[in-house]
Image 1 (tube, rainbow, N blue to C red):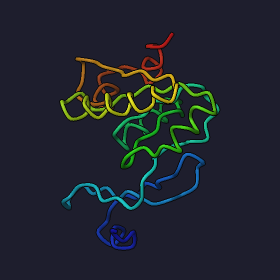
Image 2: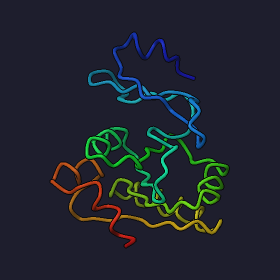
Image 3: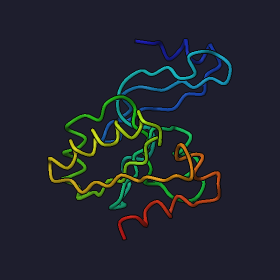
Length: 155
């Protein structure tokens, strides 16, 4: 496991990783200069998991969460590692609806379909957001679309 203090020494920006209950379980370090760009400790989510919103958008990008929050949309979480079964169950128990906005490349689409299938098997309402407008959520938002518009696919 990669050491968080080493990430800080390398000048990485640190994002806390939380579980579905909002408990810090690790961190992600992002670098502008060093390779690899991302180093992770733990699995869970980056973002506000304790949101009261019924709809949660799951994405692959940590910066996506920050841009969405800047637009006053606080129900966007970035997935770190594989989504645990207990997190899926907690979303179901809390009556959440999930929108997956993963990268629009082949790998991202495959991972979104795989996760959607796991979630749907539990009875969780899950949708996959697809667009030709951008490769990932950050680019979609930078093209002038609002984070709120992503939520409209289920209305």
